[in-house]
Length: 325
Image 1: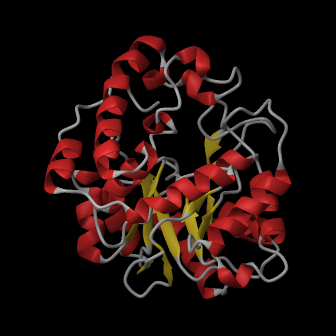
Image 2: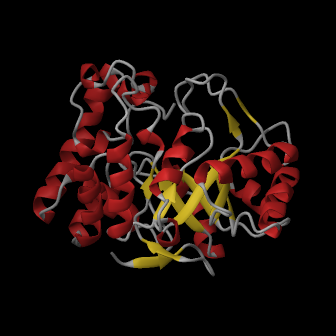
Image 3: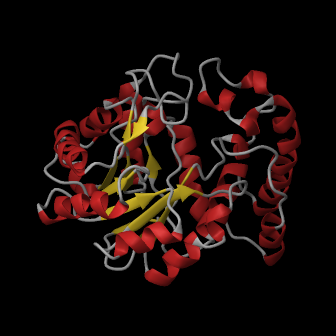
């Protein structure tokens, strides 16, 4: 897999990374966890050159970092660029990031200092390559939170720090305290908000942009034709775009992605990922999967070659019906 720098001065990473949230949280949580398969998928990703491995303390909560720590034992840690997050606190042990009872933002400096040590213990490492503020706490000035994260860098517990789901003004306020290495936000063929200002600002400043949910939470792959196909305990059942009427309307997007895929000799997932990759040099999508088949499919997105017609058609896709949350 070809590589890119994780922002100016950052480490080389594969142009596609791996999001690990779904291995322990959010999607079809009633199904038995298969930790051994998930660990094998992490190894498969690294072997394929998808070296950016992304997790967070709130996923599970805590169980995702523990799983990733096990996956990166026995020499795998040195081959990965490891990213985790702080700043969201689960309200209860069964909470997941987007399922409602996530609890609260917590950007207090003391929480940052405590959380990095706990994350390192779970991950089985003495440092992470990227420590990200999961959400800005509206009750704490970002300068205070970011200052505490800068302390984490000064202590050697994180090599770089990044932000998630922020606007340009928040990035600028953080930059006044310490360099911003990355910004993580949702970006896909059906979520294009960052293209207006956040992504151009990141490109101008040499900040890596890490799109999560680049496959539209699986919808753009064509896996779901109706609301009833979603597992009973899957948090997508709560999202507006997956409600039956909206989902039915949004299938037009999938049909048009599928048409481009057929012309390109690719799968819909590969086309959706390749479009995200086409948005800039330091754009590193982190699709999540716990299945070897889907991991291999995602990796193949780097081989997709678009014609000008293909790109124009994808750029012209209509907005989805329904909000993100």
